[in-house]
Amino acid sequence: MPMYKVRPFHGAGREVLAEQLPSCMYRLPNLHRRAAPAAPQVGARREEADPSLQALESRQEEILKRLYELKSAVDGLSKMIQTPDADFDVTNIIQSDECSPLTTNGADLDLMLGKDYGALKDIVINANPSLPPLSLLVLHSLLCERYKILSAVHTHSSVKSVPENLLKCFGEQTKKQPRHEYQLGFTLIWKDVPKPQMKFSIQTMCPIEGEGNIARFLFSLFGQKYNAVTSTLIDSWVDTAIFQLKEGSSKEKGAVLRSMNAALGKTSWLVGNELTVADIVAWCALQQTGSANAAPANVQKWMKSCENLAPFSSVMKLLK
Image (cartoon, rainbow, N blue to C red; front, top):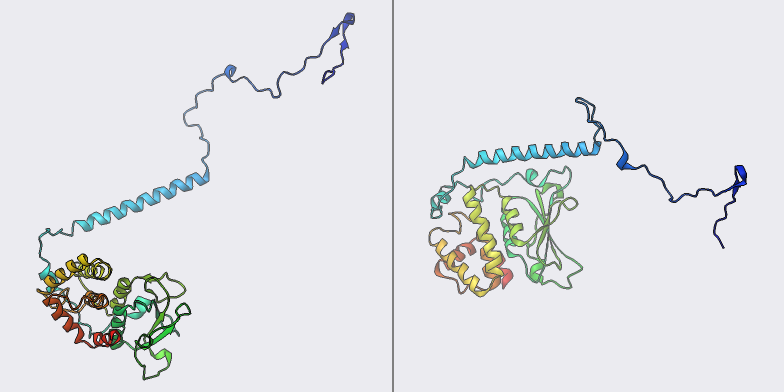
């Protein structure tokens, strides 16, 4: 049975003519028979480009321009800096580095922490009571000698119990003054965290993590100014104390103690002749790892110099 039935029609002479059915669904022009396009005339108007493409090209050109300007600035600075030899002794630079002692005026807290009228700027630190950050406690005591600080210690619900000495690690604040009369707030929260965390702008900033990084920031509140060589050595000693002396193997600890003994044979403190954050972090790392008794002679002498300072001696009471 046919699917389609077409009626025949009769032309002249009664001849039956069949209708012509289409052999394809769509008819397209034959491209091979089309004439070649004419060559574009000189000065003819080009087809307009996509606006988004033009914006992307403009942005790329702006970025390349800025990168070229930065490269030129870096090249100019590199010409001003002389790279020292590998055997260059930086002791003279460190000793001639004029840095104000910790007893002078501090840094501009409004500049470093931001000024908020009518509100006290708080530094909030979360720390685990199972491994208390001793260096932060030493720095808190030093900051209290410089600024009027409103100190507080709290316990988070993630911690079941905290030793009594840690709850009173900031001592008793005998003088109760209105909150606005203090220069700085220092709040320590004992919390179940893997590493210490610090914020001074709770709603806007990401936390600063790690005891060494927090110690660097707190020490910067003293307003100390160092040259590039001294700053690099301080940072190196802080990292060495945290990652090798405190968290490293026994072999690494021994190597650090030998390096400390050699450095302290030349200067009174680890970097130069003034107390820095490197001394604070290294001393606390020795106390927490129990390596103080096995320290070499120069390190032992340096540790006694630290312990003669009130902030260190107050932390020593927490270890007993």
